[in-house]
Length: 171
Image (cartoon, rainbow, N blue to C red; front, side, top):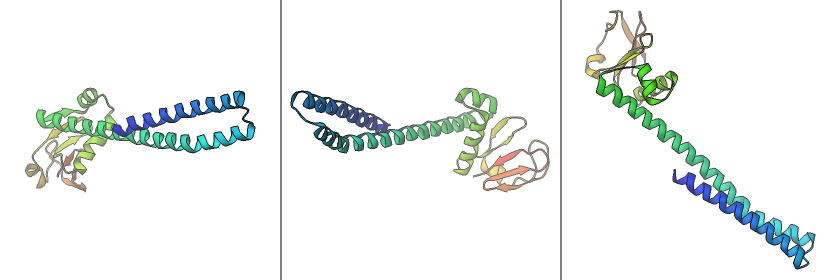
Protein backbone atom coordinates (compact mmCIF):
# COMPACT_ATOMS: atom_id res chain seq x y z
CA UNK A 1 0.00 0.00 0.00
CA UNK A 2 2.91 2.32 0.77
CA UNK A 3 4.34 1.86 -2.74
CA UNK A 4 1.00 2.83 -4.22
CA UNK A 5 0.98 6.10 -2.24
CA UNK A 6 4.61 6.93 -3.05
CA UNK A 7 3.93 6.17 -6.71
CA UNK A 8 0.97 8.55 -6.75
CA UNK A 9 3.08 11.30 -5.15
CA UNK A 10 5.84 10.83 -7.74
CA UNK A 11 3.36 10.93 -10.63
CA UNK A 12 1.75 14.10 -9.26
CA UNK A 13 5.13 15.71 -8.61
CA UNK A 14 6.31 14.88 -12.13
CA UNK A 15 3.13 16.30 -13.64
CA UNK A 16 3.35 19.53 -11.61
CA UNK A 17 7.03 20.01 -12.48
CA UNK A 18 6.25 19.34 -16.14
CA UNK A 19 3.37 21.83 -16.30
CA UNK A 20 5.27 24.52 -14.37
CA UNK A 21 8.37 23.95 -16.50
CA UNK A 22 6.44 24.36 -19.74
CA UNK A 23 4.79 27.52 -18.37
CA UNK A 24 8.21 28.95 -17.48
CA UNK A 25 9.57 28.10 -20.93
CA UNK A 26 6.58 29.79 -22.61
CA UNK A 27 7.05 32.86 -20.43
CA UNK A 28 10.76 32.94 -21.31
CA UNK A 29 9.89 32.84 -25.01
CA UNK A 30 7.34 35.62 -24.64
CA UNK A 31 9.16 38.00 -22.31
CA UNK A 32 12.87 37.17 -22.46
CA UNK A 33 13.33 36.57 -26.15
CA UNK A 34 14.21 32.89 -25.91
CA UNK A 35 13.87 31.36 -29.38
CA UNK A 36 12.52 28.01 -30.54
CA UNK A 37 15.89 26.23 -30.16
CA UNK A 38 16.10 27.41 -26.53
CA UNK A 39 12.51 26.30 -25.92
CA UNK A 40 13.24 22.82 -27.34
CA UNK A 41 16.43 22.55 -25.27
CA UNK A 42 14.40 23.50 -22.19
CA UNK A 43 11.79 20.83 -22.99
CA UNK A 44 14.53 18.20 -23.33
CA UNK A 45 16.08 19.17 -19.98
CA UNK A 46 12.63 19.17 -18.38
CA UNK A 47 11.85 15.74 -19.83
CA UNK A 48 15.07 14.34 -18.33
CA UNK A 49 13.63 15.10 -14.87
CA UNK A 50 9.92 14.56 -15.42
CA UNK A 51 9.85 11.29 -17.38
CA UNK A 52 11.81 9.25 -14.78
CA UNK A 53 9.67 10.64 -11.94
CA UNK A 54 6.44 9.69 -13.67
CA UNK A 55 7.76 6.30 -14.86
CA UNK A 56 8.99 5.31 -11.40
CA UNK A 57 5.70 6.55 -9.95
CA UNK A 58 3.68 4.39 -12.35
CA UNK A 59 5.76 1.30 -11.55
CA UNK A 60 5.46 1.84 -7.79
CA UNK A 61 1.73 2.49 -7.97
CA UNK A 62 1.11 -0.63 -10.05
CA UNK A 63 3.21 -2.80 -7.73
CA UNK A 64 1.39 -1.32 -4.75
CA UNK A 65 -1.98 -2.14 -6.29
CA UNK A 66 -0.85 -5.71 -6.97
CA UNK A 67 0.32 -6.01 -3.35
CA UNK A 68 -3.05 -4.78 -2.12
CA UNK A 69 -4.83 -7.34 -4.30
CA UNK A 70 -2.61 -10.17 -2.97
CA UNK A 71 -3.20 -9.02 0.60
CA UNK A 72 -6.97 -8.92 0.09
CA UNK A 73 -6.90 -12.42 -1.42
CA UNK A 74 -4.89 -13.78 1.51
CA UNK A 75 -7.38 -12.16 3.90
CA UNK A 76 -10.26 -13.90 2.10
CA UNK A 77 -8.41 -17.23 2.29
CA UNK A 78 -7.85 -16.72 6.01
CA UNK A 79 -11.53 -15.88 6.50
CA UNK A 80 -12.56 -19.00 4.56
CA UNK A 81 -10.25 -21.15 6.67
CA UNK A 82 -11.58 -19.66 9.91
CA UNK A 83 -15.20 -20.09 8.78
CA UNK A 84 -14.70 -23.80 8.07
CA UNK A 85 -12.67 -24.42 11.21
CA UNK A 86 -15.14 -22.73 13.56
CA UNK A 87 -18.29 -24.17 11.99
CA UNK A 88 -17.04 -27.64 11.12
CA UNK A 89 -18.87 -27.50 7.79
CA UNK A 90 -19.61 -24.71 5.37
CA UNK A 91 -21.63 -24.58 2.20
CA UNK A 92 -19.89 -23.12 -0.81
CA UNK A 93 -22.91 -20.86 -1.30
CA UNK A 94 -22.47 -19.42 2.21
CA UNK A 95 -18.76 -18.90 1.60
CA UNK A 96 -19.46 -17.14 -1.70
CA UNK A 97 -22.01 -14.86 -0.03
CA UNK A 98 -19.98 -14.08 3.09
CA UNK A 99 -16.74 -13.47 1.18
CA UNK A 100 -18.41 -11.52 -1.64
CA UNK A 101 -16.76 -13.78 -4.20
CA UNK A 102 -17.55 -16.41 -6.79
CA UNK A 103 -17.68 -20.19 -6.40
CA UNK A 104 -14.59 -20.45 -8.65
CA UNK A 105 -12.66 -18.10 -6.35
CA UNK A 106 -13.71 -20.11 -3.30
CA UNK A 107 -12.64 -23.32 -5.03
CA UNK A 108 -9.29 -21.74 -5.90
CA UNK A 109 -8.81 -20.58 -2.30
CA UNK A 110 -9.62 -24.06 -0.98
CA UNK A 111 -7.01 -25.67 -3.23
CA UNK A 112 -4.52 -22.97 -2.27
CA UNK A 113 -5.06 -23.67 1.44
CA UNK A 114 -4.62 -27.39 0.78
CA UNK A 115 -1.45 -26.72 -1.20
CA UNK A 116 -0.07 -24.65 1.66
CA UNK A 117 -0.70 -27.59 3.99
CA UNK A 118 -3.05 -25.52 6.14
CA UNK A 119 -6.44 -27.11 5.54
CA UNK A 120 -7.60 -30.63 6.31
CA UNK A 121 -11.09 -31.70 5.37
CA UNK A 122 -13.24 -32.91 2.56
CA UNK A 123 -15.77 -31.70 0.04
CA UNK A 124 -18.20 -33.06 -2.47
CA UNK A 125 -18.59 -30.39 -5.13
CA UNK A 126 -22.04 -31.72 -6.11
CA UNK A 127 -23.39 -31.14 -2.59
CA UNK A 128 -21.37 -27.93 -2.24
CA UNK A 129 -20.43 -28.54 1.40
CA UNK A 130 -16.91 -28.19 2.76
CA UNK A 131 -16.11 -30.14 5.94
CA UNK A 132 -13.26 -29.60 8.34
CA UNK A 133 -11.66 -32.79 9.63
CA UNK A 134 -8.64 -33.84 11.62
CA UNK A 135 -5.80 -35.04 9.39
CA UNK A 136 -5.41 -38.18 11.50
CA UNK A 137 -8.97 -39.18 10.61
CA UNK A 138 -8.30 -38.77 6.89
CA UNK A 139 -4.75 -40.10 6.39
CA UNK A 140 -5.69 -43.78 6.39
CA UNK A 141 -9.09 -43.23 4.83
CA UNK A 142 -9.94 -45.92 2.29
CA UNK A 143 -13.73 -45.62 2.29
CA UNK A 144 -15.75 -42.48 1.46
CA UNK A 145 -17.56 -40.91 4.41
CA UNK A 146 -20.40 -39.89 2.09
CA UNK A 147 -21.13 -42.98 0.01
CA UNK A 148 -18.77 -45.74 1.15
CA UNK A 149 -16.93 -45.86 -2.19
CA UNK A 150 -13.19 -46.47 -2.58
CA UNK A 151 -10.98 -43.45 -1.87
CA UNK A 152 -7.66 -43.09 -3.67
CA UNK A 153 -4.87 -40.54 -3.89
CA UNK A 154 -5.58 -37.92 -6.57
CA UNK A 155 -2.71 -35.50 -6.08
CA UNK A 156 -0.56 -33.81 -3.49
CA UNK A 157 -2.66 -33.64 -0.35
CA UNK A 158 -5.86 -34.68 -2.12
CA UNK A 159 -7.70 -38.01 -2.15
CA UNK A 160 -10.93 -38.57 -4.07
CA UNK A 161 -13.81 -41.02 -3.90
CA UNK A 162 -13.86 -42.99 -7.12
CA UNK A 163 -17.66 -43.30 -6.97
CA UNK A 164 -19.15 -39.93 -5.92
CA UNK A 165 -16.16 -37.59 -6.43
CA UNK A 166 -15.93 -36.35 -2.83
CA UNK A 167 -12.48 -34.83 -2.34
CA UNK A 168 -10.53 -35.24 0.90
CA UNK A 169 -7.84 -32.68 1.69
CA UNK A 170 -4.84 -33.81 3.71
CA UNK A 171 -1.90 -31.80 4.92
